[in-house]
Length: 142
Ligand SMILES: [Ca+2]
Image (cartoon, rainbow, N blue to C red; front, side, top):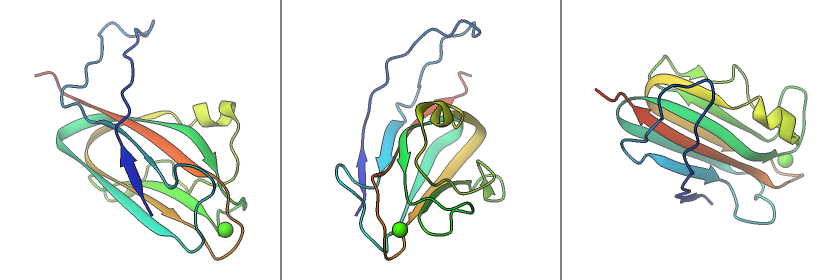
């Protein structure tokens, strides 16, 4: 089961940024495995995000709450940059129950990409709340 919906993010002025970022293509959205409750067992979901031109894509996470394992063996979410040899954006899978501080550490800007692949997997037992990832793509202004 997958759910994709649009989430509009208020633009904010960043003190260390001179330019105001404008999402030229309106490529803003969020991905999550469930809208409430827990995800299902034995899920294999993936979402491919295609951007009309090379973009800088900001990724942030409202929550990540999956079965925990030191190597994320059971339930996990990962982000691949398909433009750059399918590199793992975080260098690893993500799993466990992350507190707000650790979630903030996952805020990244993926630069110069046209395609990202977000995948989620759960095994047959122990389900939790899942994740919600928010993305916002910025194209080059000129
Ligand atoms: Ca599980």
